[in-house]
Picture 1 (cartoon, rainbow, N blue to C red):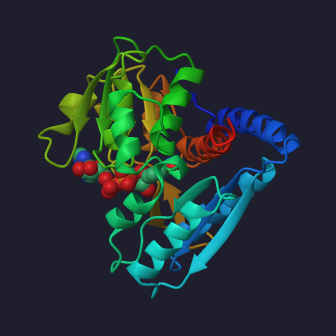
Picture 2 (tube, rainbow, N blue to C red):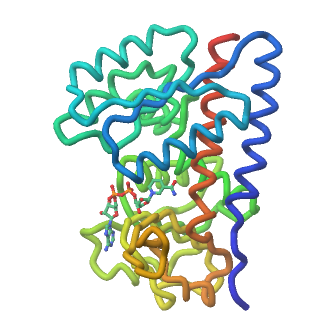
Amino acid sequence: MPAVLIDGKAIGLKIREGAKARTAVLRERGIVPCLAVVLAGEDPASLSYVSAKERALAEAGMESRDIRLPASTTEAELLALIAELNRDEKVHGILVQLPLPAHIAEDRVITAIDPAKDVDGFHPVSVGNMVLGRPGFLPCTPFGVLTLLRELHIPLAGAHAVVVGRSNIVGKPLANLLTRKDVNATVTICHTGTKDLARFTREADILIAAAGKPALIKPDMIKKGAAVIDVGVNRVPDSTAKKGYRLCGDVDPAAVEQAGYITPVPGGVGPMTIAMLLQNVVQAAERRTI
Ligand code: NAD
């Protein structure tokens, strides 16, 4: 039997409805959750991510402060802007769209954000809180993957989860969240230094691909019936597509015959990332009004 296709759009919508309802409660008290969205440069993928996030915020009744900067913006200018947004009482969350132009140190910019407004969950304080299991903002994509698995009631306790990728924004935090006591999965992390990737992926009850490599995971690398979460969003050239490319995940589409559950690309993890961002923004606004 082919895998059950996981509808990230529908599950994401449910989360977004929850954020919208919480926003309505805040609005009754005269508080409008507001996210400052900072984009430096004109990377086409970043532009489309930013507009999708802003559309979702508007649909949930939240505000976005759209700040577009030229690619020539200096690090000092960006840091001054962050300091201003940190002070601004009307701004509850700050999102700096990555990647930044090469002459700006992402680390310094992320660290300059007030952790109370760090709705992306990338600040070292947020990362520390996550690792220690303390309250704080969780990074949206890993939080979205965990929420998907939970919403589908996929057994996590005692399951073997294999995460392919160790980036600071996806692989590492996701592996960390899955080992939390209230999740209780056993986690293996694979990366470019892993010898014989398939040996590990074949053991996975839950396989999470976050490598950024089109169709890296082939059907014969998947245990029959496993839950396969494809985080990858890769642009592959396609002359038959209007834009000249199509989006493709890290998992070969033929894996649908082997997996028990699988996320499509697009329509799987992507919508969850946006949903969790909205949830973090409303949480930031609520926290400041307690
Ligand atoms: P990254 O390039 O920072 O990290 C990729 C990781 O994969 C690295 O740690 C590397 O060690 C590992 N890797 C690469 N090739 C490998 C291989 N052949 N075998 C084993 N490991 C390998 O990427 P990232 O920022 O973590 O993003 C990963 C993918 O997820 C990208 O396609 C990105 O576009 C996508 N992404 C999607 C969302 C979403 O919302 N859907 C959000 C963030 C990232």
